[in-house]
Image (cartoon, one colour):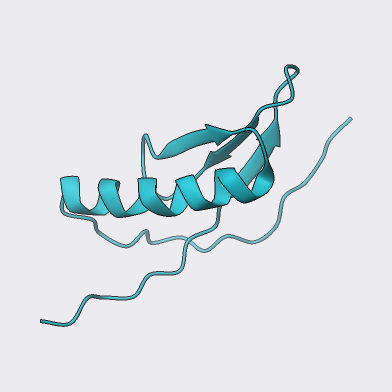
Length: 71
């Protein structure tokens, strides 16, 4: 059986304590943290797999356009 390929946007933020936080907006509750960007990227890949296995995932009907900073 062939696995379906997905393409997710991952948002990475840095907390005041220096930890990196990665979130997948298209999968509710899919996030993780790590001490380095490399570590958080490895962990978010694992989190995505776990989230997809835990529930029947339906592709979102929207498309990511761009982050915008408003001051």
